[in-house]
Figure 1 (tube, rainbow, N blue to C red):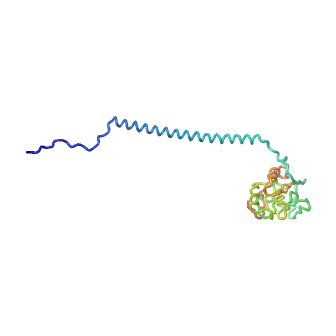
Figure 2: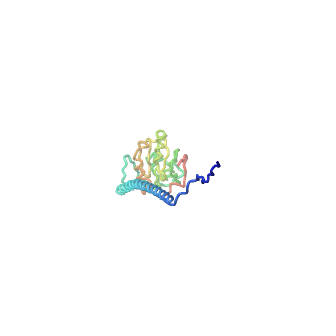
Figure 3: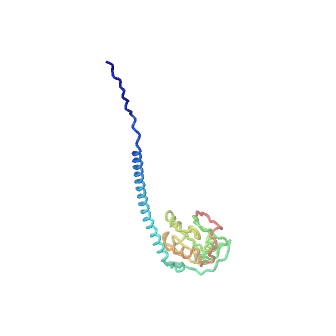
Length: 234
């Protein structure tokens, strides 16, 4: 018997394309997901902003409080600063005697000197590792500089570094002075104080009282552009 022909069409294995309805649903889900992500991002941003604002607010309050304290703190007139052990001399403006040396101990009772006759050039302010010429340093004192000298047998190493760190960059000189009868001596024109060590608090008061003081004979005159002594490091 003759076999029957299969006249049926084969089933297609390809998936049918999404309908318009399904495409709309997919787009809607994508929009919802994007909206949720944006909401989460905004929430994080707000939290960061609130935290940063709080930190900044604390900082502003601290600054304001500091300004109020500083503003309301009465300023001390440098001339009213009292220093224990301060020695002063009533000196006229020093005359120039170079190249003759000056015996400050015999002529003025000073060692190191704190004013008097001196040479016509001044010592440039700064930090020195070697002793300096008295007559040059005294001229710098006439310009309202402060000369800090130290006994190298008593001050060295970490102590010397601590002392150096306390010396201002302008109108101040630091140098060793062998034979001092105190570890550190601070001198200005007509004033001097012997300090017990590198951490003696009177050094700060002396600087405030005499550095760039109008009581010097020539305040505002330069303390640079003249003579660099030996061993200048700053």
